[in-house]
Image 1 (spheres, rainbow, N blue to C red):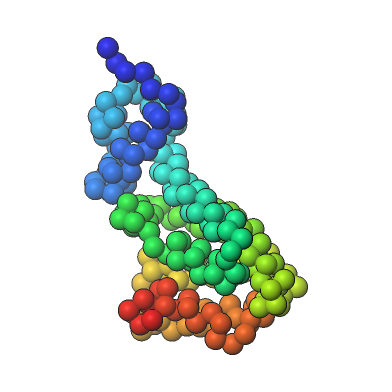
Image 2: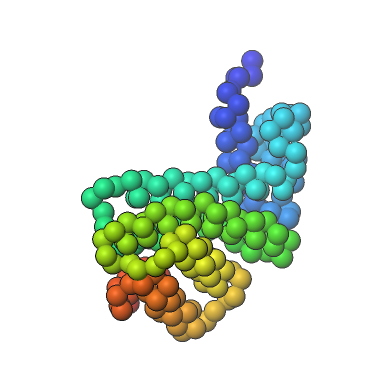
Length: 211
């Protein structure tokens, strides 16, 4: 007798199996039939939840993005943390992906997934920018930031960091990447009207061995 599972549990089971397949076999080589066999489900069950392999990949990516969003919201909700502490922890969380997320990101960097990767970057900016803008507003109240446009400032900073600092897109040499990160920390200071050197910790987050 087949065990009946609630819809959310079944959906996550499909995503978990597909995620492993996409990372180990490759997104382009993995098929819907592979997912069916990995989950031991019928084709009708799969199509009840997803219309295509692309939709599955999108759901996997969104699951990571929403997890990052939830982690950022938990940081922002902590009343004991200063604005700088919150930015530090949010950046640290976003830039320390586990092996599962790294595997999916690698698949997004393939030529066939350019459009999906672009959508994931846009979604990340849309979800994180209002959260970080709230932190900037806190920093303004604390007197450490001075900007008339918290939301827009964060949007420009997020777009530049999400794109320019994406090693899967630009393939910077380490020395080049270090220069970009140092420049980004200085740009953050200017855009947010922060004290010179106050965002030096950003470089340490990307290069902890140099901290």
